[in-house]
Image (tube, rainbow, N blue to C red; front, side, top):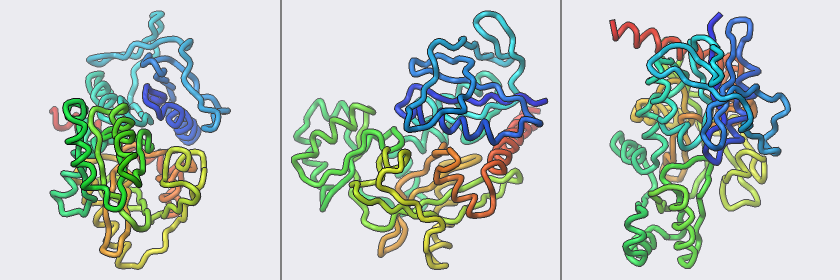
Length: 358
């Protein structure tokens, strides 16, 4: 029986989201085909053997226990071991469901490659590029996708001259703007700025989460998302689109995304055939521009002038009620089938790597 390491938790602010995602994936994996080894990463960064808790709910903010037995990853290949010396055997595939820094930014992917463990999902480069909003936008521009105007402010620039940075940021504030950490997820550290007097605090907040902040002109339009899935034969399948309707909140923030506070998901979104076709082409172009593998969720605004891409998420929320799996369920692929396709993709990447090495 093939052994799959389900890796979850992590040091980011999206730790609890990852735990709930792990529960969904753990339940969906076919236990008659695969042995599942649950590897939790604590908030302090320790890798531990942590059983997935069937009672985990996001509103309870679950987390990986620091008291669980610690693990040693097999750098250079070999078997997974506990620090006590107990051997858990060879890992045939890793299924990381980590969100945010150190999980979705290429870090865990690089570690798995050093351990010679094939894994589900995007590689080091695609993960790192997608996580960095500034770099991703540059690539989107290069392939002809429409993006919002922005100003980029680094921590060094901010410390050297706040007045210069604020002057640049004010150019974007027409009529209002989002201020975001360049590398963060789930809208953590994001502010909607409506007045100039609020810019400084918003930039300070963004820079507390990352060394680079992006002040981005707010796009007014319909908020639309679609999911992209790489099939085992290499073809890309784009899901039906979903629309996010936000009420009672300034934007689609963490609470709206994960706690259902003031947001409604409309699946499928009501789009013309022309708009649907253009969306699928744009989502595919963004996926390929970043060099994505396996899966991604692409986020857009539909304006009077057309589609504006906001970001690509290489490890989107993946609980059974998250947008990514719900969009594919509406497109004819249920949660269990989705998980199995991703697993098969992971094993397929391993075979391709071995053939290349030969």
